Figure 1 (cartoon, rainbow, N blue to C red):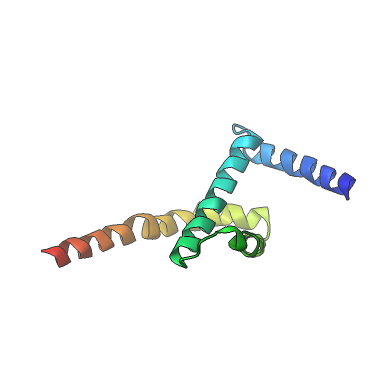
Figure 2: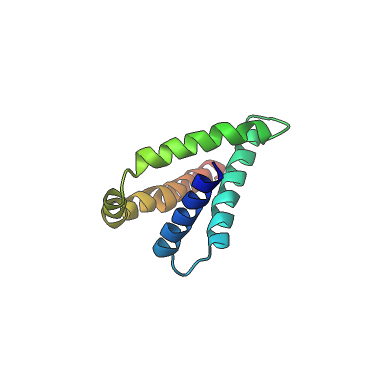
Amino acid sequence: MGVCTGLLTVYLYRALTKQFPNQTLVEMCEAVFGFFYASTLSFAQIMKMKEARPLHFPLAMILIVLSIISYPNASYFLNFVSKIWFPYALTFGFLLPVCMIGVAVIRKI
């Protein structure tokens, strides 16, 4: 088990450094774990739970499955980023918040 884990770690590190040459492994892990911790903590607060720990394993399994389903290979990912990501991000990252702010301003007036 230890040798397989070590080889997998080396392979993953090489793949990630080729994909993101300007970032170190620590920076990438920090971003991923920070996002994961914030997600589990916010979900626990929404569900009014005292502890977020029981959510770590189920949400990790959900994220792993969704990552495999979302991007089955590198060519699909590149196609998504080059053709689909900008309209998607524009809709949900800009237009939807602007519409929600507009509705909130109109309702208060």
